Length: 148
Image (cartoon, rainbow, N blue to C red; front, side, top):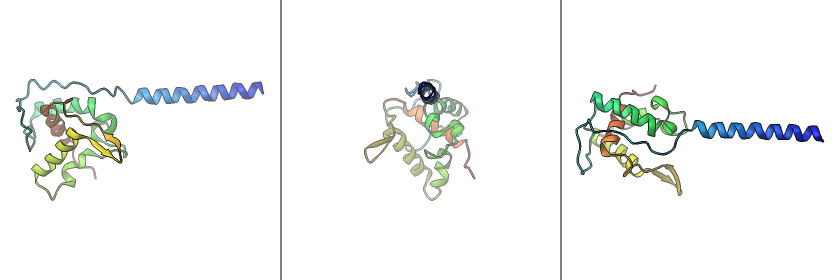
């Protein structure tokens, strides 16, 4: 009996260690600030299309912002592990829509988040990230290409 309890305790300790490691590996879930002070400021009115498409500085800022705020769910370098949408497909999935419609869908989702059957699948980032940060993230995503 004593050996059985020792094995059980060891197994429980191993499981607890793995669970803790997984939780720690998920990273800090607190949204991280994004410094967009070097980008042209966009004002209070939300734009309908991405003003930073192709802007190298915005892409660099967007890369950092994405990896600090989005990668934990959508994958490093915008490569999804399959649980969340693969954001590299954003423009590809909207091939029958205008760029304005595709950008509008992105902005609606990042601003408002996604709730399905009362469960939060993506938190809303409006009020947490600025419009400049959101468009910089989109500019970065646009550079990642469409998966085959």
